[in-house]
Amino acid sequence: MILLQTLSVADSLAAADSLAEGATKESIGLLDLLIKGGYMMVPLYLLFILAIFIFFERLITLKKASKTPTSLMDQIRVLVQGGKIEKAKMLCASEHTPVANMIAKGIERIGSPLKNIEVSIENVGKIEIYKLEKNLNLLATVSGAAPMIGFLGTVAGMIQAFIAIAQEEGMVSPKLLSEGIYEAMITTAAGLVVGIIAYLGYNYLVSQVSKLVHSMEYTTVEFIDLLQDK
Image (cartoon, rainbow, N blue to C red):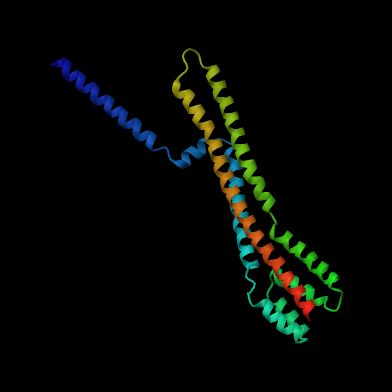
């Protein structure tokens, strides 16, 4: 009887320990894991903030640049064919978009040979494309650098873990080994997350820039055709 009571108490204590251990494991949240990643998480935090800032800043810029009214060329055609060049210039100046800026430069060159007008428009277009693509290379760099920094953090963490294991005397605790490894792997996971987000954001922005460039080229062709028919 005494033996059964002793076993029952032992089982109760073991169950309590198991529950306590489970509660401790459950209490490890995402923030705790990120903190355990070590000092190499700092540049990853900075790269993540930089990637988010560039993405939304470029997204807002591209949205504004794409707000050229579809009826702009129709209005320009009517004004130019009617000889109202100044009104056409004022209409383009009121838009503040890449397409409007290119057409405005072409209107300023009316009277010059078509080849010169086309070159002037292309030069303005190159400047506008450069403005649209600003900081996209930096975002691409973040998408490539973040996983590499994360992997570097993992390698550094593994080195520290094995140094700690080498300094242990006697049997190496599996807990010590596992903690060192999972803490080291955190930086790789974080680096991959930052890299994937930056990569997806970069590709989306590039696709939006490509759409705008196509619109600019199409409008340029329309304007040159308008001058040839004039």
